[in-house]
Length: 80
Image (cartoon, rainbow, N blue to C red; front, side):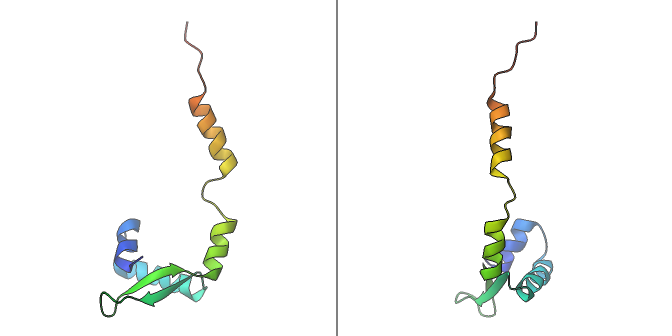
């Protein structure tokens, strides 16, 4: 994904996104690759360490999601 696309998605400036990507790249979570479309532009791709974190951690706990969805679809008692 391009820095511009990432910045737009996150609601920050391209400069802010670039600094965040610098930090992630230093920790080997992501890497930048040059694009062929625009000279000097780069895309960000997940790297080995980032892939391992993504696999080990989930924003949504599958068990909790099931509980919440089950509760949302459970019939409720009618008020008397």
